[in-house]
Image (tube, helix red, strand yellow):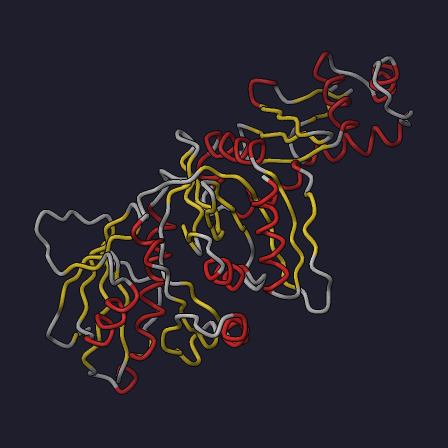
Amino acid sequence: MYYFPGRKIFFVEIGPFIVKATTNSGHLVDLVERFYPYSLSFDSADRIADIHVELLRIFPTRRWQLKRMVFLSDLENPYSTFPLEHNYPYFEWGLNWCIAMQAHQYLMLHSAVLEKQGKALILPALPGSGKSTLCAALTLRGWRLLSDEFGLYRPETRELTPMPRPMPLKNQSIEVIRQFAQDVPLGPLFRATPKGDVCHVQASEDSFRRQKETARPGWVVFPQFKKDVTTRLYDFAKGRAFLKLAGNSFNYKLQGERGFRAVTDLVRNCGTYYLEFDSLEHATAELDGLCGSA
Amino acid sequence: MWSCLDHSRLIIERFDDEYVLYNRFSGETHVVNRESKLILDAISLRPSLPEEVQTAISSDPSDLPDISVAQIQEHLAVLEQWGIANRIG
């Protein structure tokens, strides 16, 4: 495969990771500058990257290669080629893939993590549960974003490591968040990606500035959006919560006994709840109440 | 006759009335209730028939309601499926 010339290299510091990215798409660089204004650098001096990625526009030698890009990490290619205009969503998804494949020093939970008053709220959930939308709404209500996608738990220190990044909203969620807060900092809309229409909410400056500040886990809440239900936060039996949390982890099995001990710690030391919600107003109020009652 | 996985291979953590079992050998995790845990305790002390398990449980000072042999067999079948209990002899 041949690529267009004009490669640019940049570094992004995302929580504990330094990402080195190479691209020949100026558009992608502009978007990364927009979403990571506090942690982007073009200076390579003394930088040893943890994650190396390349997003390259293919020089077409076949008709199907017109206006397409490829994502590479250490020469591995987890995705097929994708349209040029989807470069930013693939940059983010590609980073998720790299982290999930490499960061086994952490127990990695598929969850949003936010912090208030020194305690972290873990929101583990399956796709479609409303996790990202709820996470974005909580950041707009003053919670600090640690991560929208990864709960990075270090069993040895019993702390969650931040990794603030833009929060991707999909399809109807985009309009839902616009109605929740009119001044929400939304990026451009990427239409018809494999996950539907995608639009990112910018993480706050505070989240980036405090991205080295870990947090103690306080609550594990399993959120589930349902139409036409009364929003309700209720206790979730710890044994069941254990199974759900372990099943939600990217690397619980791989961690072996360390993973079991880590989940035991989390479940023992956190309040465990299930949140059924039909509106962001009600859900954020319930979770604020949880914080206030602690 | 039933016996239980060697305890060096099994970690048990209690959370209220539920017990989380971790099988060090397979890496699998399961949740059981108090009945299953008492059955597990009984067969881990010595290999037992379901009737012997029933006697052991009924002598337990806890306020667990009576459990039939058929119910014990059902619990054992689940534990067997998970590789935690096994039939011997």
